[in-house]
Every structure is written in structure tokens, then in C-alpha cells.
Length: 565
Image (cartoon, rainbow, N blue to C red; front, side, top):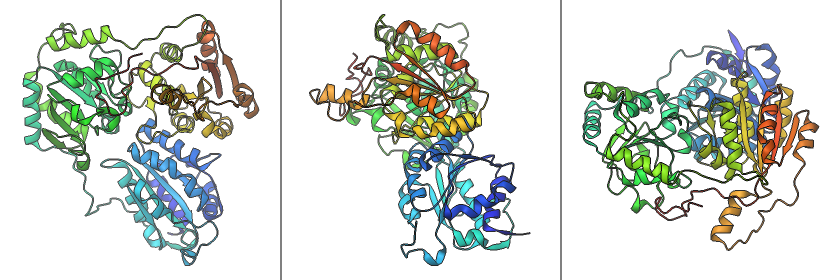
């Protein structure tokens, strides 16, 4: 069967079980769009900006665990997607990006809308390809999906020149792929598993420190078994929220710069840290020389370059998180204690943690005049029973969502952790809503971040996506303002948003619904009404202008040196 390059691409996407492509057309991909109607099983979601398209593909991937797909044109279309590609790369999200390119004879000649997107994205992709021969295209697509989804997941880019899209060849899609230079290690070394089992048995003050790898490998159930069976408290990074139910007494909350007092004190006082699928980034460790000085660290990660990168590790284990936890379970099952009736504070360690949680919990005071942002998030959590998919932009609202929403299942919190990309949350919510049309998807946003990709309101309305956007509106770029208050003598330079749109009118202009609430007594009723509407909704919540995120660990300090108010 002889097909054009454009047909080969679309046929191969179906062979990879792709159901949705997020994109924006242009001259360098017009041949692909010309063939798209012939593939009715491929839903195309037209974004209003390429950054919206790549973030939506990212959100789709995080919500489903499948590879997200983004299609954009050459030149500015490709460069507009770079921030989203870097976002996916930093958070290890499997996305395949197809970019159009000028015809191969024109490459390097500064042709119209030509840019070296392979060179530009080399530092922020897991791999990228420039296809110069249509006969190579089926293999390249197979390799791209294999690379994106296996090992440590990440974005892979395919740059496809216009003449390659038009060229023809006999189509033969590979059934399997094997790359000599790429063989990620999934199964753990049995000797290392035995060592870990031994230290788990002997530990007096253990803690599980879960990272995004737990969710990426679908290992939440296995981690929960380990924690509950051996009464090991659990803390997690921003990327791992939902990997362990927040209503479990063993849950300590998020750790790090804006982590809970109990989580930060626990990891600092532990004698054993089981770091599963995490990377010990600076927002978690604080001052490295003071981090967990008395603990033996076990680090499990499928990416060997992440181990020993930032902290000294006692027992390194290169493996898939789920494979490791399953192997550890087999090794420990003979030692399972009877804890069915044991209270949460049945050991001195657990009793100490319980006292920390009680002494210094996450707290705020909600009065009758001004809405506190924490109250809004707590109300959303209560109304949704922790079952919604929550996305966020980046800033104070992101931290309040992480702290005060009670996540009970994996893949329910979608946020830009590594790159910290403002504008991510709304298009990511669109991607999640496309994946799960019957679930409630809520973007918790700030009045600064939401304006980064606000044009995607047209996308949500066009496709009838009932995404809810809850804006915690304080009239500032709030997180930067907080740093200026605490560390820069309240020099609020360029952080006050003096001119802002009327978000209710803006929603209505796009065909969505809009609400505004400034009375604490009306927050719950407005949210209930908004969540019940079967359409895109903006809820503009006017909050305390100078409320800060707490706890907070100042830069360069130990994570035990928290500002608590």
C-alpha cells in the first residue's frame, strides 16, 4: 500500500492507538490537515495558540497515562510550543510533538517560517528527529512513541519537512521496535531489593518520600500497601500528590519549601528514607548540607542519572517504581505484622509525627469580611469529595491547591512542577476534560497566570468542554509579591496588576458563564451553582490581597527553618 508521508503519519498515529491530536494548522502542515478528515477516529482539537495545544496534550497525557500528541506548523508555530515542550520535559510527561518544516532543499537557507526546531529543542526533549526520507517515517514514529512512553517518560519531537509529507512510499509499520542504545532497566536487582527489605525491617523511624515516578509507573496501589502494612508515614512532592490518599492517618502532606511542618520535620528526623520515583530537587531538600543528616537513603528511580545526583544515597536501586515495589512486597510478605487494630500512634515515631501534625497544622482564619484563598480550596475539596481533576497555573494558588485539597487518587492533580509554567493549568484542564468528558475538571488559577493562555476559552467553548476555572484573584502576581514582602522590604515592583479584565464579562464574551464572589458567605453556593452548569465557567473569587503561603522555607535555609505564618 503506497501512501504519502502525511497519510503515513496519520495511519501510524492510529496504529499507536492515538485518539486525540491537539494542534494548530499552518502552511508547513497543510498536507497533514488535508488528509485529517479521512481519519474520523482521530479527533483533532483546534487550540487557539500553539502553547495551548502542547499544554493540552500534556494535560491529556498526565490525566490518562497515555502519550499526548501535538501537531503544529514550522517556524513560529514550532517555537510557540517550546515552553510547553520544556514543561513536559521537566515533569517527565510522555508527549509526541509533530512539527512541520520547510522542504528539505530549503533547510538552512533562511526560508520563510524556517527555524531549526531540532536544535532549539535538543536540550528539552528526550529525543528528536528530522525526517529527510519518507521511507524512514514509519520507523521514526514507532521509535518516537516508544521513547516517549518508556523508561523515564518525556517529550519526543518529529520534524517533518513539507516535501516528505508529499512524497510517497510503500507503507509498512513496524510491529516492534528495538534500539540498541536505549534499554531502560525495569526489573530491580534482587540483591538491592533484599538490602532494602532488610533496612525496612530494622528501621525505627522510616518515611516514604514519593515522587512523580510513582504516578508515572502506576505504582500508587503498591506504595499504599507498603505504607499501611508496615505503618510507614508518607510524604510526597508536588508531582506525586494523589499517589497516597490524603485522608489516611499516615499521610503527612507535601514536603519542601511550602510543605507541612510535620512532613519537613519527619524527613529531617527519619532514620530511613525510601525515596521512590523522586529526584531530590532544591525545592524539596532546602540546604543540602542539612538535609536528612541522620537518615539512610534508599533511592529508587528508573533514570540512573537521577541517583546520587543531589544527595548521597545508601542503597541505590535502578528500576521502575512499580516493579521495585512489587518485588519488595514479595520479599517482605513473610514479615507482615498484624496491625489491623493498631492505632496510628502505636510507636514512638508515629506518636511524634501525630503530635507534630496536631501542634502545627496547616491553618488560616476565615472571617466574615474577606475571603481567604485556603477556604476556597477547602470548600472545593469538600464539595467534590476529593474526586475532581485539579489543574493549576503557577503561583500562590498552586501551593494553596496542593496544601488544602484532599487528593485521594493518582492522576487527579496536574500542575507544572519543574519548569513552573504560568498559563499551564487552563489548557491542561482542557486536555484532561477531553480525556474524561464525564469528570469534573477544575483549574485553580491566579488572576495573573490565567491571562497567559486565556484565549483557550474559545477552545473550551467550541468543543463544549465543561471546564471550571476558579480564579483566586488578589490583584497581584502573588508569589513574587510574597517574596518582595518577606525578602525585599516590600518593594512591590511590577507585581501589582492595576489593570485587569472583568473576568465575568470576558467569560461571557467567549460564550462561557461567569460568576464573581467577594462575600465569604456566598463562596459555597456560587461554587455549587458553577459546578452544576454543563458548560465552561469562570468563577472570579476576590480574595485577601496580601495573604501569604505558609509554611515557607527561605532560599538557602534548612527545611526545618520554616516561616509558619
